[in-house]
Length: 191
Image (cartoon, rainbow, N blue to C red; front, side):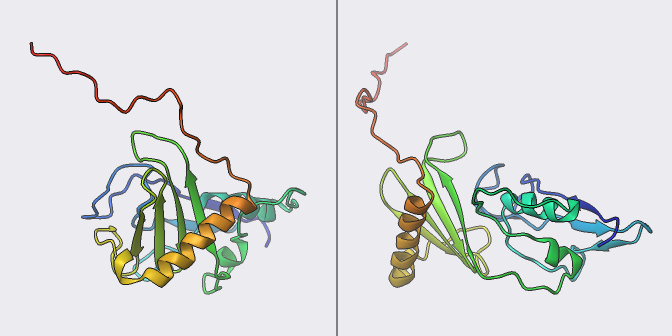
């Protein structure tokens, strides 16, 4: 592709329009943002319009995509990514089916420790503290308001096993208990 400029909006600040978790940096899908490609003649091909083409991607997918458009090669070390350049050149391209993982083994103001796998329309959120799973069908419940784990125990079990395998495959650091942590609530004082 000659002289191509790529513009991608990867912001996560849009609300789902009624979803239960509208804060930034959470794991709930957002309304798709524009992703476009323009050539040297200034013609802009938008992948987001009334008839947009929605694909689930991860931000790490942008790195190999930019490398392709720059004519560079991927580094020798393995990356958890997909090159999106074929999709940008031809929006009708089908991406290979894959699982996308997010790993957050720490506390933040946005979430508690968890690991997430997205597989097609399904998303499993494994909560480290309790060992519980939240399971959502993102096609029918984009705001993730209804946990359907109890209705799909086989899928939950299969994706939970994929999470465990992925953690081993990438040698992700494991959460370890803090031996100095005191779970006793602080004493309250009357003022």
